[in-house]
Image 1 (cartoon, rainbow, N blue to C red):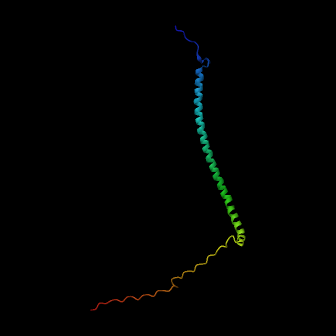
Image 2 (cartoon, helix red, strand yellow):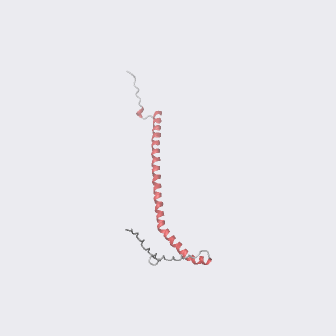
Image 3 (cartoon, helix red, strand yellow):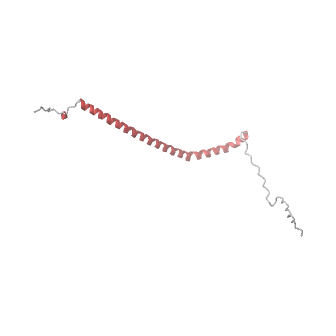
Length: 126
């Protein structure tokens, strides 16, 4: 009979081959997880960008709804109060009122053209 090697490596001994395969597996899993992490980070960045855009639009709408009418009223109030002072200083000319245009005469009041008499008919001699 042939001699059989009774030692098995499954008994708990770690060999250099086991270390190499474990390291190779660790690199493969690490690479896969890194790519997945990159995809998740990109998706999260896109989501945050969209959320920031929605927040900015909502803030602008709130500002337009509250601030712009107040700015318009404030501007009109300031202009109304400063107008007499600026006119006295000669910095702003008084608004010019337009002269009214004369109304056109209607057809009944215009001079009518004399109506032409109808042309005389030429008759044949018999």
